[in-house]
Image (tube, rainbow over all chains, first blue to last red; front, top):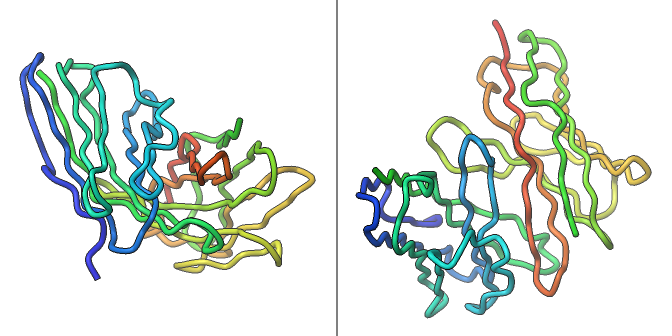
Length: 115
Length: 114
């Protein structure tokens, strides 16, 4: 069974460019999470969706960040324009909520470097 | 608002000795509590969770955790540490806030010395 699939795994981009990170959650999962991990701030929840609907985006740093989930099998996190301080590992994760206890399954991460 | 605290940045233990990684939480209502492990350059992997029932939860790789409601703690334990247990450990809490929101502690790096 395939896990959470993220692309690209690594991206290096110049400041000011648009960055799009992609995620395919585990089939049948109804929750999707985007996290950002840095040495300074640890693992931050940026936004999460339930049944493709954004529930809480209070962790999104600023208007340069946006996330969409057009269907149950795909989500994107976009940064426009990108800045060096956005350099981090971005994790997508999915889970089956409710009585199952909401165990989260993580992708391998997208390693973003903005120069 | 929910929160998770891992008071130790790093825990050092000798191989064969017992280990404890601490976690305390704050949440309204009934919490779902989790431990995850992260190896270098990888995503987080689920270790164990507490939903309800027995306060002692057993998980992968010989790890266990004890839920203590009065102390709002969920410490991770293992009777005998292995060098291969060296990794970054995260405690997490999931609570209903219009959806199941899961947040993570800052992480504790475990070093097991041979």
